[in-house]
Image (cartoon, rainbow, N blue to C red):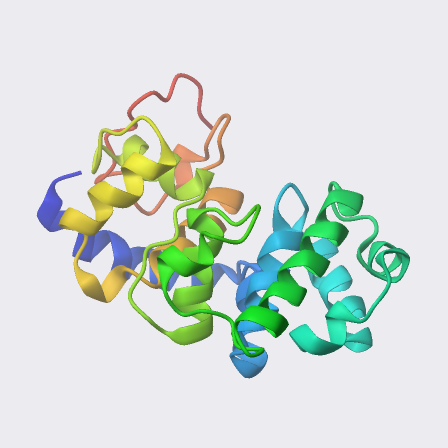
Length: 220
């Protein structure tokens, strides 16, 4: 994919998501309900190694018990574990969620930081989660890169990077700003439904003519 073709690719993807009715990622659904950075942060933590449906269900149960850092920090570990089961690594996540909630309540006046470096200080919060909080919670400039974004940008031939971290930096340098916030949602849904990790559906892909199919060995 040539650099200039990214505009065409993003337009095609936007239409494909709408036409096919591909499901919006769970964290984005949480964010669009009330644009609460705290809920975005906690939902994103729950989403790691967890299916979207489980993320949505466990987030709803947890926020029904407590929907602010102050309220959540007063819950017991057992209450949080029960609410977020069966999210992946739910015991580890329960402790992490409690620790972060207490930090936000005690050290940040109950407000989730809106700076990348501050968010990265929370134990267990990586660049993907931090960028999601910035983009979905605060509508600030940021690029969230998960495995789908990293894989697809390289499969297209738009980038040649080895890690998600390298992909984020490369996209910051070349991706037009108007796509920074939306690229994660578009490529996650595209990656789950069309451009799958193994045996992607290339024969029916609306981006077939633009894609280099780098590294693709087997496809449908």
